[in-house]
Amino acid sequence: MSATPHAISSRDNPLLKRLRLLAQDSTAYRKSGQVWLEGDHLCRALLARGLRPATAVFTERFWVQAPHDLRDAADHVVTVPDALMAGISGLESPAGVGFVWELPAAPTVLPGVAAVVLDRLQDAGNVGSILRSAAAFGFGQVLALKGTAALWSPKVVRSGMGAHFGLRLVEGLSVAELDALDVPLIVTSSHRGDWLHQAELPWPCAWVLGHEGQGVSAALEARAGQAVRIAQPGGEESLNVAAAAAICLHASGAQQAASARNAGLQTL
Image (cartoon, rainbow, N blue to C red; front, top):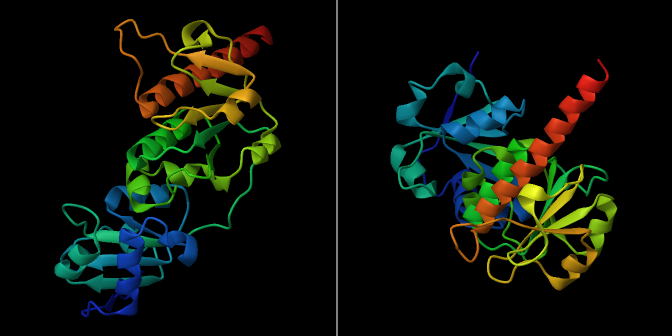
């Protein structure tokens, strides 16, 4: 049975003030330990992982037609006028529903698990897109070095399209803390290293993706066991980092899948 919603009509309500902060401040989640998930897609992505929000917020108009899985998602449910949701929203067209989710305790680097390392990436769209590729191609954790865009910022969460909920996300790391990974580091480069389509890629491994303008830092390059570049017969000087990440992570995941299939055939 759906929880009875609590109607909020004042923009000065403490919950709405907190939601505006979460929706508009890229690092507010670090202090509050909560994130604001706006829209049907993100809310359903959370539920699909068996996770439950602390609070569900509906516009008055959407509440009357909301499907039961969203109505029943949280014990604490509130409704607000459409105009108040518009004052919270970070979207051009405000959604009819949003969830407040309590972030899990800050995780640590997990040894022996395939990872993606973000070295000072600045663009939220790039970061979110890389998270989607990591989740799609079998990488269990994303590790952000200091100076990288906040992984749970509203823009990164929207760009990630739900990938956040299937990944172990660790922020604010130093280069030295990557030693805990205990897997080979592979750095991407536009001008040196093995051609990706010819390279033997280790698994598990950690792909290192560098700053949009400066690339991977010298400190990380020195720690890497392999450098890889992508053939670009069209003659472009370099690829967008999110596009390069998708190509590299797919190649790595595909090699791992092929190795697993071959191993299975050999045991028949």
